[in-house]
Image (cartoon, rainbow, N blue to C red; front, top):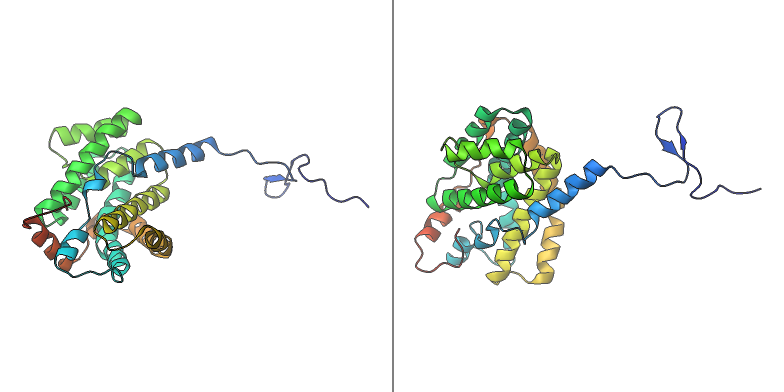
Length: 257
């Protein structure tokens, strides 16, 4: 008795309509292109200025309030209570508004996110990196959503926050919101542990262990961000705000935030 032919002709499942058999399944060009855009925008070489930020970590280090052992816990708490409810939620809402062409909502999301950043250095870091991202995305990706958002920023109807600019860029490129959130949050984590490396709070091997261990947390934060509405935008991390205030007045700083 002969066995099944591996890699043989592909038929059609009469029930589900999908391919059956051993043949290769053609990739979805749209999904692949979305992945490539996501990889480009979240690459550490993308010149948005993320390398100038410690995301508050330097303030903790200056106050001796973080150690190599507690750094991963600090990152987890920031994801759940600050970045997730704040920037990640704004990204999801901006993606939704840009996809629907609701520019008034987009401006409102940006204004509200900006208002939740209580310290000057946090607001400045967000708008500097956001406007840089917007400028480069307009040139490299293009699309009406980016042009309309650029008009809002130029007219001072929107501050140009990084998370909002990212949401618009992902929407313009057709990257699904869930994938956009996962990519941008992972970029935040790699930037944070990169700062930890420069502050000697970790090494290259341990940094990779930390990044992989965060997968369940990132999935949790992504799901929560997708479910929030505009009224829910904004985190609560008072100690992080205090550390940012200390850092803003420090005599010497390695990072902008």
